[in-house]
Length: 148
Length: 439
Image (cartoon, rainbow over all chains, first blue to last red):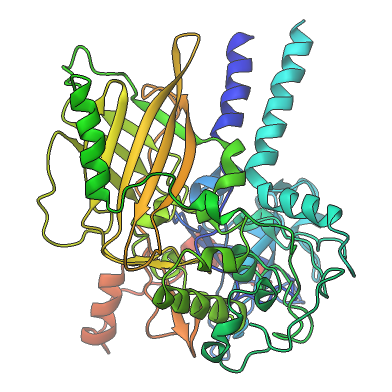
């Protein structure tokens, strides 16, 4: 019991605000886009971790360019240690993970955004129906928030 | 009894969270509520703070507070802020926004619907007195200050010389005491901009207003970490650098502070030695001595730089005198009381002053705590004058985690070669095929 209480108090004392390392003025914070995609790479960067993914279109199929090559997007989050505390790690988000995220896109229209709110992770082998996201799939996992 | 203890512990956790995350917000809201603001609106909802961390929004006041008249020309209406120098000392020129509020005015949504002229007002009653920023000591230079305190120590039989056996045991992990937030003027969160300007020389006033303008109006924040610039010495006292949450290790000849969140701060106090470096260093060169259990330090040879975030620049003449004194509770070391006096005759009109308490939150042998050495990697570059996140399609993009060296060879020296195909991982391709209905 004493150990548990010490842990709680210690945790309280260790807490520091999750600060951003750069201004987010480059992102259009008036727009929030919800995207679902297939993870191609998780970048556990200390300052801001990133998830790179192939987004699914409104038809539920992977988005491809005119040559048929998958289009990739990226989303940046808090630092790797901070999102690890939310359960988002290299181990829990391996390549092939299907997930949904809300993001503020870059103002210049490039395929990159800044995450807002929770991430919904689809159960392995299950995908949302066209036009829906992982939060609609039974057995989904929410990370970094209580609601999607 | 056990339940009460758990409730108490949870209450502590909640209070710590609150003080860590929303000090600026609660202060601004509290003052605003008492100030009879005209046209005050509720604070905007947080915008995506969960994903990347961030700062609580500040209240939005679309117009000047009651009894306060807007200036015909201010920072947000100016065509050339250099021509407005006579107005820089008027808080209305900045619409009573603190430096931090100016930095955040675009990202917090306080710029309004017709930027920049629709920028919101801050709380005109919020400020931290100039006289508390100025040093209370009579010394004109850091050297004079250090020598005077050394003379005091000698008069008392010092400076104290410790052995490995008698050295104070301060090793451990420390964290800033949140109750000191109300006095941290270097954070830019508690002052009107003119109060900060009033302690700067004309050249450095100009530089600060230039930063205010280009962060608040041009929307071109040039934060050090955006571009992986060095943090610089004065950022040890900034809020967001988290430099005050440090790992302290010590021996007879050296006391070391290691901290950082965007870049690393390594400060070493060299006991009983003198400055020998002839060129400025990013975090200076620090010497010190013990006066009883108080550590007295003198930092010189600092590279001039910027504290950024709509605050001020400093020159390579910046020097500090600092003290670290132990705080005990029932005989146990619980923290260090810290005082810093800043001397910079180029940037400051007089020596400046700041205090903080660092709470000892864990011993070095804590099983869970680690120092994460930061390798700052960034793909932010200025595009048309503003920082922008580059993506892989930009030739300046560096794919740090994708074997960038090999990508370079492949791009320039392996064009047209017949070589093994490299594509997305097989399991990803398999999932894409399934989604395409091919499997």
